[in-house]
Structure formats: C-alpha cells, structure tokens
Length: 79
Image 1: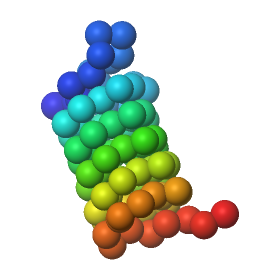
Image 2 (image 1 turned 90 degrees about the vertical axis):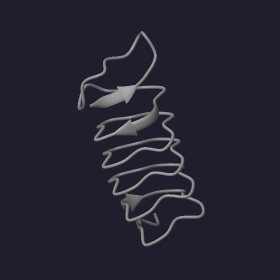
Image 3 (image 1 turned 30 degrees about the vertical axis):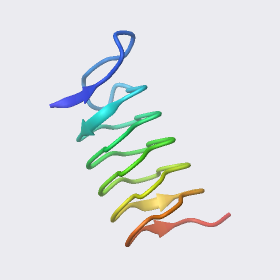
C-alpha cells in the first residue's frame, strides 16, 4: 500500500508523505492527487474519505476540510 511519491519521501502511511499521486490509505500527505482514506492532506485533488484536508478539489466524504472546492458530502470547517 502507501503512495507513489518522490524519492525523497517515505512510502509508509503516517510518515509525512509529500508530492503524492494516486495515493491510498495515506496520512500527512501534501500535494496529493486521487487520494483515498487520507488524513491531514494539503492541496489534494479527487480525495475520498479524508480528514483535515486543506485547499482540496473535488473531494468526497471528507471531514474537517478547509478552503476546498467542488467537494461532495464533505464537512467543511469555516474559520
């Protein structure tokens, strides 16, 4: 499992992943695309079932998102 990410980043979930693409079951991702079951993502696209996302696009079933666009069934925190 884990993410397809740059050589400078770890592939293990929960290890501060960065610059991900087509991720699954990630945690602390950044600059992700097509994530699933993520946590604390930033600048994501097409995420599913994430928590604590920021600056995301086209997310689904996420919780605690901020500054997201085009989300579906997400709970966005407005500060």
